[in-house]
Length: 327
Length: 116
Image 1 (spheres, helix red, strand yellow):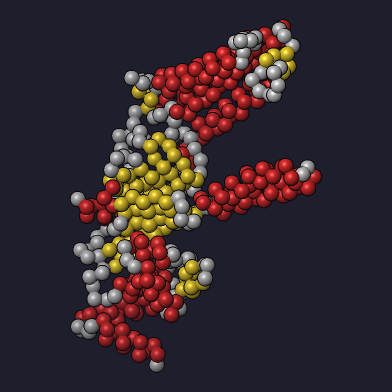
Image 2 (image 1 turned 135 degrees about the horizontal axis):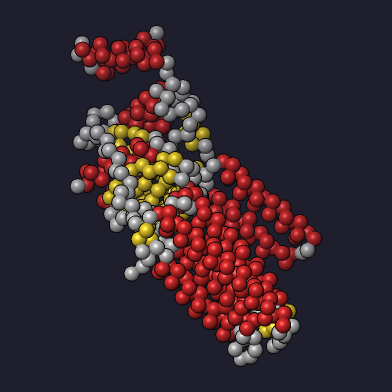
């Protein structure tokens, strides 16, 4: 048995408490303990990193680490949970991850390392114990959080086209990332390259790994900037303009196609290629680049994919035509 | 872009695709400056050979509806037809039907008028 079934607002409130407020309280309480114990104890503490037999660092190192990991993690996960207003309620994996990370680094690596800071317990007990505690905290968070009831209705199937016997209907469309977004990412990558070249000239050749991140950005941008979507007698195909990644669902594996109103932030927590738990509790992929009507294609096993194409209604009607012809 | 064809009809499939796209450009459904899907994608959606689609695209280019540019694909240059012309065509088609004139004859008459 997992958590109680409640309405959407209650499930969402509980998710926000578990992902933001409880981790925040844990981080602040951990800081208090670390500062309280650390300031009165040994000035140097055993740490689990660095070289040499004598691996120690000033006691306040742990206070800095807990703050430096804790607050950004809470802000990062909190940001997505706050914006993803429609997706937290049915499967609270995000609060569970927030809780797990917080317990591991604040209680295990932070408080644990300061309290148990003598051989042979340090640094194995705080890290190992923290890991066990973190898994337990994440799992019980996921277990105990209340769920919202799955939506009784999923996407409504489109009307089929009046295709006569022998006729074949085909539809092609595109999903484009907004031009300003492409420019923004390309600009960031260009700035990183310029920065990297400057470092290369001033610091030397050993900074070359700095070019990894702009290269990665540009590859991801090239892969996701445009997707091509086709619908017809062979089923549904979506693929990147580069050819990969590609997803093909034959007409025989299609259960339903229809138009849904999509808000990328609320439904998927962001833009681009996304995965989220849908209202029917099944996972759904999204290639979502703008708010508005999108095409939802549901497979026989209940999983679905949503693409925000223009003229989604026609695409859904074409697919429905070939779903109906199967039966 | 939506295309409906009938492979069992006597009109060749490439001509049907060409006609479908021409009509959509004439009615403004496909805007001037828009890019048509790659021939491979359109062929895939309809389950036809890519050369069938390429032949339709060549027909559209010869008819002044699109430009085929290397690397840029098929760009629509044709503009929506004035509704007066479409109405006149509709009247001519209706007259031909009621008089029992086959489509081939009507097209031949239109071509002769246009070229004169």
